[in-house]
Image (cartoon, rainbow, N blue to C red; front, side, top):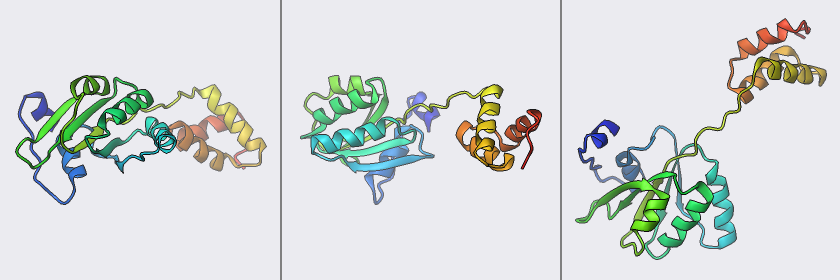
Length: 182
């Protein structure tokens, strides 16, 4: 897909039961994991809360929006997600003036001052925010969890989920500290 787009070959989805999936497929953005949000709430407080949550979302985000509120939405998205976040605007899909526009939130705001037609927005997810745990950090956390009464095996499993490191590697670090595996 991305190779076709990079080579300038147009990608046109086959119409299906949902515009969200067609837009996602043709977007060229990561489609292995995505979240469909549909239309965002119109009430400012509720919309703001939803956008705060979406700002941390690592999966590709698919939104619907009507032309009457697109300008407000894009401004809110740019503030919440950052104006350099990649997105694809799918407009008038399966119709004569179908368009897939690729850029950033900042350039979308500049380009579509007066949007026309129904839009599906496909927004790239947030970059992963994995903090790096060195061996000392892991061993300190293991000792704390064991002082709370957890076995080395359970503490290793919990830290593996938290750190992204393998359970076996964390368990071995625990054995190196001389702590009892119980």
